[in-house]
Length: 197
Image (cartoon, rainbow, N blue to C red; front, side, top):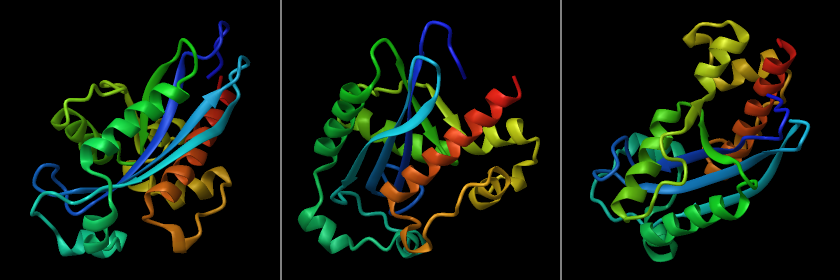
């Protein structure tokens, strides 16, 4: 989206891995963030990245969720950041990388899951959410831009439609790699939207 007076938003592609679906019962275990910045002409590119691993502090663990991300919970208990330190670093990253005069917007693929975990942990730690309620879901965006139904918005399906190479399978469900690939997909959707006028 091109702006005559420069970019209005700095987009943040965010992916999280968790020990289950509900924050406060289950644990947020890792966060990957890729900033997406625009120049004065409105051209978008991938910017700085952040990756954080958190100590699990709640008792809830769903084995199927842990099987997906493969993070070692014992290692995270020893080596992970305290949740509030991780949230502090996230908020500082957004403040440091947000373009002058722009608003930070959360971007997710199934954004309700990722945003919910981030928003809950920020509130629990008493840290202001740098995104507020500003967020966009790439699945919903793809429905509008590509004219496809919800069940046609899997990440690989969108990538195929937009000509984006698939992510290395060995990095899938690693939050930093997922956030980066999701950012590429989002930029391609913005470009497709721009072509539509």
